[in-house]
Image 1 (cartoon, rainbow, N blue to C red):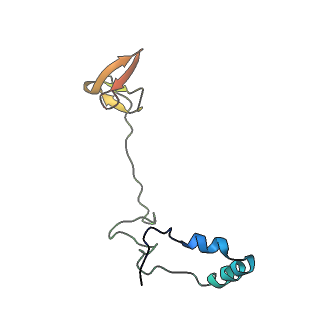
Image 2 (image 1 turned 90 degrees about the vertical axis):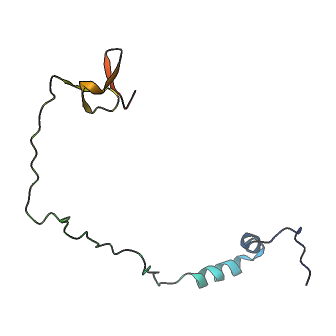
Image 3 (image 1 turned 90 degrees about the horizontal axis):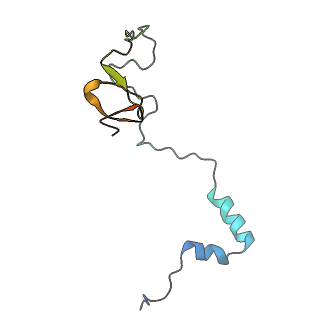
Length: 102
């Protein structure tokens, strides 16, 4: 059988455009089902890393001492991180900018 490769191809959308309303309704009801597709290859939602306590049930509290900004540090006006003065790149209108943001 000869194939005309220059002829326009008919896709699934072309077939749907020519179907009657009753056929479309019947096809929709046939394709829908009450069965849920389960992906057996998907990772389990209850996956936990070995040795990691992600549940917070261990009773441990993380404590960290908060130190105020030192005299040799500045807060970048762009990223709002506290940097050492050695990271100062420029000063724009009285605002200090770090090397990463410059």
